Length: 365
Image (cartoon, helix red, strand yellow):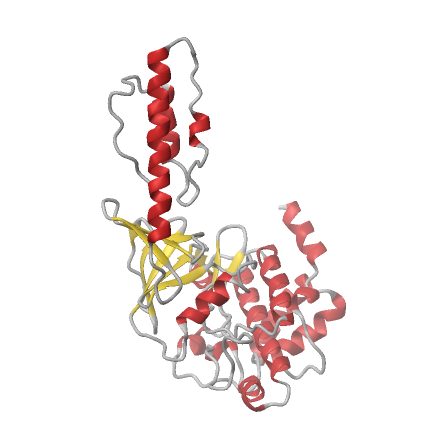
């Protein structure tokens, strides 16, 4: 937050007053120095003029901070539970929840990206991305999603934080580059980068929360960890159900799974299997650096497969399974890829992984 220009305080750019003002302006939005007056210590108490100048600077900053808090408090919460403060000179807006906690801001740079079925990337920087909602999803309650994102999903590191700040704008944390783009460039992601995501997927499933649309296009990588994006159509208690169908991609689901999710007697088991199948397949593609069966994947008219991966693709995946899956789980991993949902018990990808061997390989590189 900017402050008024401070004149007749000190002409010396190295003075404590000038440094104090600069320090205030560099504070992260939503976290200014509340006890700024205490920072106004004078280096020479005998210099009365300097002492007065420092105090005037400190009071100016404190008054500015007070005005900022009053502006934020006075702002009205919109229909999606968001408060907005706009700096017209900087062409930037800041977004807060109903309690005044900072959520996000408009990114610095215009960046027109590909247009999806509902959203299009319009701005981005290192911290945030801004998406324009060009087609409203009538089955999606934006307020309910914001409440879910600020509540149940808040503690999950593997989900990029996002919220609808108004009916046509979504702001999300920048999770890095899309995994699909990395694969298209022939680049790969280490299995270790999926560890947090797989661990938290197990936790989410224990709360009956299912994504249903895991795929490389909905995963990002920031050189450290892989995260989920575009999760607003997930299934969660009190938020969204499978009664009207699920949003998913044909190449990462099967007719067998969809039938069980929609009409079967074990919907939770089928939903859990769907996520585990999709994440395992996506993970193998990401760590190998290539897609399975590119021809069918790129054909939007391709039918949803009845079962899982074809024999040729499954043979290609076996080497990866031997290198990364615990021996006692390798047969189950193959079965998950071949016919997801057919397992009698629960299959958890995180528990299958040979993390000790994976971490040892990482240390050796």
